[in-house]
Image (cartoon, rainbow, N blue to C red; front, side, top):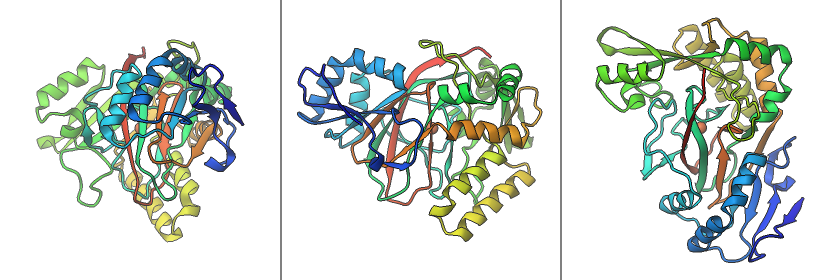
Length: 363
Ligand SMILES: [Fe+2]
C-alpha cells in the first residue's frame, strides 16, 4: 500500500496509506487519511519548513481525501502543535461558544479533545455539526499515546451521503434536522462530565448576553425558573454542499437513542459486560426522564424513527477508519468532508485538538 512521494524536494518523507496492521477495524476507506511519514529531517523546524513548502499539495490532499496524518516528526508539546497548524495556514479559534463537549484549554487555541468520561464512546460527528457555522479545519495531536483502544474513528462524510438510502436522504434534505439542547445551571453530581452548563457553553453568566448570542445565530431558547435550566433549539441542514468540491456531505451528530446504544454495542467486546450493560441502562433512563443533554429531531420537531437513524448509522460506520494513535501524530481533517468520534478509552491517553476557518451554511 506504500507510495513514495516523487515530488518531495528532499525525497525523504513518505506519502502512503495506513497499513492493515495499523488499523483496529477493517475499512472500506483504505485511502483515508494519507500518512506523511518522516523519513529524513524530523525536527519541529524541519516540519514547519516542510508544510510551508508543500502547502499547495497538502491542501489538494485535504480536498481529495478529506485529511492527512503527519507521523514520526518530533512534535512533543501543545505549543509545537499550534505552531504547525499556524504554518499550515489555518486560523484556529480561540474560543468555541455553544460547544457540547466538556473540554479545557491547554494552550492558545489548543484544547483537550474531550473530557467525556472514558467508558463512553463519542458519536460520529463533524465538529459543531449542530450549528450552521462550523470549522472547516479540525486537527488532533497525540500528546500521550494510549496503550490500547481510545481511537479517533474517521468517517467519510461524502461517501455516507452518497450511499444513504435515497428515501432517508430525501427526507433529511427536505425536513432538515433540529438540535434540542438542555443546559443546566450546574453539572449534576451524578454525571459531572457529560454535559456543559449554560455558562460554560456560552462563555458568560449574563442571561441577556446569552439571549443575544442565541438570536444572532437564528436559534431559540427558553429559560426555566431561576435559570435552573436552559433549553435551546436550532435547525440545521444535515446535507451541506462542500464550498470547494461541490460534494454533498452528511454532517450531523446523531444524539439519538438508536445511535448511542449502537455505539455502546460496538465497544461491548472491549468492556466488562456488566459495566457496558449499566451504561446502556443509564442512557435508557436519561431518555425515559427526558433528560438527555442534546437530542436530534427532524426540523419540524418530530422524532426521527429508529429505523431511519439506524440507516444513517449504517452509512456512517460503513465508511469509517479506525487506527491506533502513535505519540506525536498530527491529524488534520477537512471537517465538512470527514467526521470523527471517539472509542472507549483506557488511560493514559491525551489527544489535543485545534479547529478553525469557520464556514457558514444556509439552513
Ligand atoms: Fe469532535
